[in-house]
Length: 406
Image (tube, rainbow, N blue to C red; front, side, top):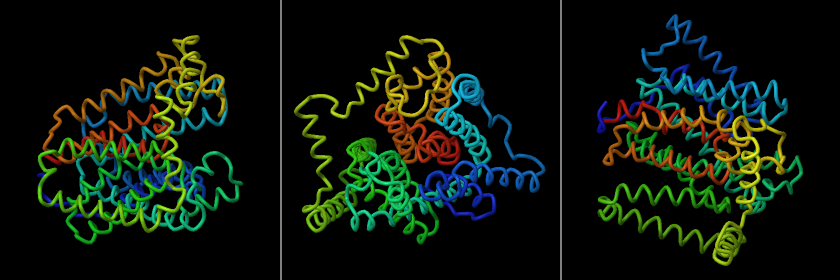
């Protein structure tokens, strides 16, 4: 398929099964309602049975499973043995389930590697689901409390109010940070859809997602998205001063000013962001305390450099900082335990961008997604956030767009 060709969406049983299996852990209320991984794995099992009945085998092309998969399996075994033999707790169990899901994602991505229409359809359905969640959350946040997400993240809401907020699409900083790179990819991929109706629907979903990022009040989430936009403009600099780009820029700027003056100027929405910026300017460093938490993990790693201490229960802040996975995992698994995951990520990213094309919008969007993934994991544990790792494996580092979009 050439770059100028349009993509026709294909809705089939396997597409719906895969999309729903991915959407459940992404959408907060569905995750609670359908017990998260339990239902996702059940749907994936049905999906594989469907493939076996239809094709008499799992339709994998020769060479689709590469050496990086072996390193991923190696890391999963490290996490599994830690879960079973070292520290049997809910956190170590969740880590095992998450990284086992990495392997499932890898296989499903390999199945759809050369079926770009089905893959884009799955991505389209994911955007619709996330757009609906964002659209529900926006009026709910304005009607209740603009700082609702922060109250939820800090544990200041009762379980009943948290459930009500999640039911209405409100998430934590992990949700809004993970949306940044995905929205930028969506803006690019929607332009390749054959159906103008599908393009409009997807654009509305993306707009709702972007708006939800800005009303989240999380500095890191907004910063990640703005950073992604700046990178996109940098890579596409030649088109920056085109007539179309200037018109779109003026319209977006005017809309932003109007929305701020009409709805946001008299609210507390920007208070957390302004205070964070003020703190940075006064102290000249981190005002969130993440550096101290990272130092805790580093000290634990220095004391246990080869095999780590395992995965202790949640909020063991005297051992693991829990806010910077690149450091936390060193403390958890040691250098030898963490190395397979690093090698897996390195090989997969290297394979995806081995022939990076600056004129290719898809390549640029995927590269930005990977870049934001790496940077955001120095701020929060984004690698364990469903939207982030599903996007990483199934979209940003997938060879589907490398093979078909050229």
